[in-house]
Length: 231
Image (cartoon, rainbow, N blue to C red; front, side):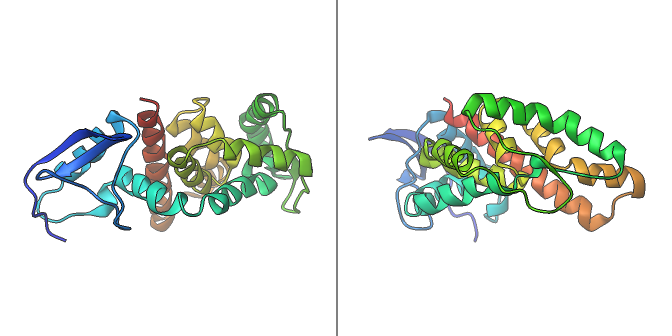
């Protein structure tokens, strides 16, 4: 799609903030008004559109994508999004520790256990740890508590939490990111701890590097999106 607009701006709107292209308010792919909760987020989305030169490249507009998802998908499928996000607690990355080599197990414990302890205190819900790949059944009460926590997020923040959870493979890491316990670089590093250990030993191929770069970009964009929602 070619860029046919000249001027990108923002304006106050009933219930939020809008982005305009040549004076016309933007809409989502679902044809709903792109109404945003903060001026900062509106400005960031406007900047994404203004940065397009000749061709519109959606991959370069992560804030637009997240906002449109919140309006078009999360609003209509809120219960499903909550369930998908909370379900990661049942098999959370940080609960599964290596039984060998010892160096990896030690690194996992040192990096992940403080976050599990933080989450247990913060949400009154403790996840159990296991070694190896055999699934560990978590307490239904604990899983219910995490579902309740996820459900407190509004549609915009829920969209970001869902994206971060999928990128990290961990609800605990995503919650820590959303709560400011971790920054984007820390969340990415912790989510990639096992892969980094293997790379240190065997090196990294091009496909793996590209995948890691894409995940890092998703986590960074989500963290930025959350900060813009804070005002």
